[in-house]
Length: 236
View 1 (cartoon, helix red, strand yellow):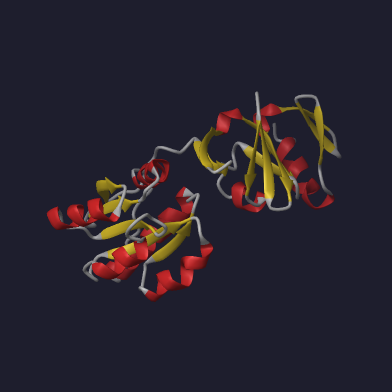
View 2 (cartoon, helix red, strand yellow):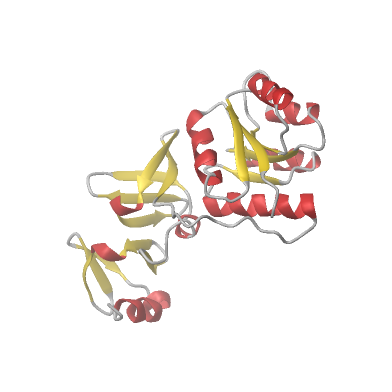
């Protein structure tokens, strides 16, 4: 049986801590000992518990994640989480297990945890994903992390590095590529029909060889996706 891994989450943003905790709760053998909003709380948690792994934000007030990582026992492994790509090199110089950019997707965090297991045990023991499935994602919009239920999404529209996520009563704009968000969506519920459009299958009202209609909006099926899209839709 694989040993349970004792972890703490260190981040000054409550919603960022909640995202990591939610993802971690879906992974076998991960035990969250404490959620800390700063390095001082993290030091106390480490002093009072045996900690194997820290999910650590870098850009924190007073004591940065980098400074904190340099000060703790080297046997404690670090998975950095941050919104700033520029810190990656310094993070890996500290021999971090991994470096995750916010907003952190479950699949990406699971990969990082698997890497920890491989490093710490030198085996291929992979923590199993629990049977419950996530039915939402978080996206960054107007400097906030917003929770979006999959059921509320009608379709997603791409504008270069920005996305418009069309919901029933509003449209949310976030800076992310369409390929990145496609990887976070359940394939049984969503379908990419064009380089600029992803649709929710249950919202499709009609379709032809050239387009699908959702909420009386006609969205094009591109030539490169046509065969896959039509084969998929004709199964229904």
